Each structure stands twice: as structure tokens, then as C-alpha cells.
Length: 81
Image 1 (cartoon, rainbow, N blue to C red):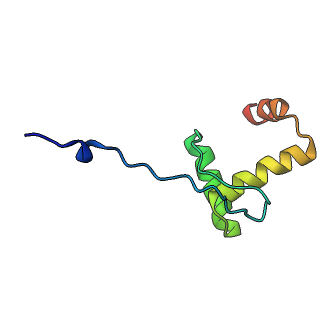
Image 2: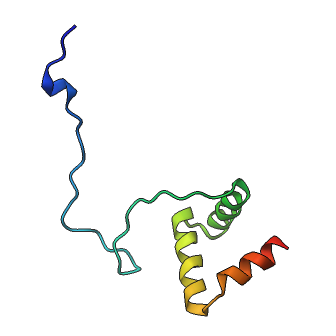
Image 3: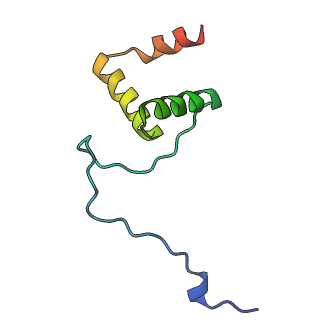
């Protein structure tokens, strides 16, 4: 069975030159992230509690840690203890 070249082409979505800015005044893009199952459950619970999506929960936590000047290495040691 022969397949012509147009059937073999892989279609890709074009990146739009303009990006929608959100309330953070910064464009959002889809990312890949690895989390433990328990962390995913915690993020999901927070999202449900505050009627947010998981991405927004992670955005808030990261920005708050930066704003507070949190020592994330120390925080990890504390959480793992």
C-alpha cells in the first residue's frame, strides 16, 4: 500500500505571534512538570478548596515563595523530616 507524501506530513499548530496576557501580566504556556502523587493530591485539594485550577495554585505558591524570600532547600529539609 502506497502512502503519498501529503498523508505522511505531520501537522503542527502554528504559534501565534501574540500571546494572551493573563492577570499576572505575563503570557502563559503549557509546561510539563513531574510531581509526586501526594503533591498532586495536595495541589488538587487546594484548587478545589479555592475554586482555582492546579496551574494557578502552583503559580501562586511559586510567586509567594519568591516574594517571601523562602529558602526552598531548608523548606524541603523541614518537610522531609
